[in-house]
Length: 138
Image (cartoon, rainbow, N blue to C red; front, top):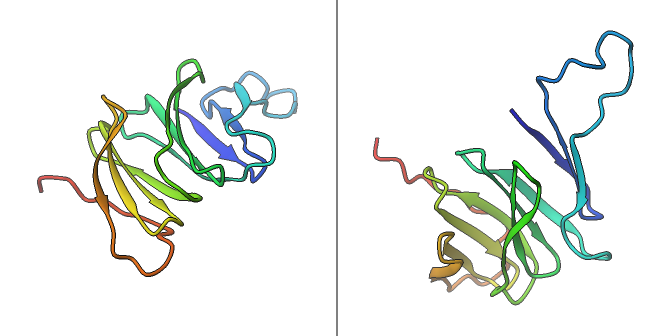
């Protein structure tokens, strides 16, 4: 179990909601991890945990998408082919693909095994600010 919160200064905080060590003495609930996900001055715009719970994705005004290992909180991939802010990201059901939305007026489908874009969705007249994906077979 993991709970993640992020702020616009690109700081990520992660907690284990099952941890009860400080509940009896009224101490503050301390995060198990705290880190800067994007460079100082960049805005963190979105954070989401993958369906398999092994990755966290963050999107930013620095034009990148970053993937983090939720066991170690180490950076595993940076996807950097967007030309403007990246607003949103959503994982496929099997956590092997990611769709991103950007102010560059594109949405991109990424293969996370290779870190490369599989498809680019264009013809938007304005910034793409959110994406949704249903790749279930039912």
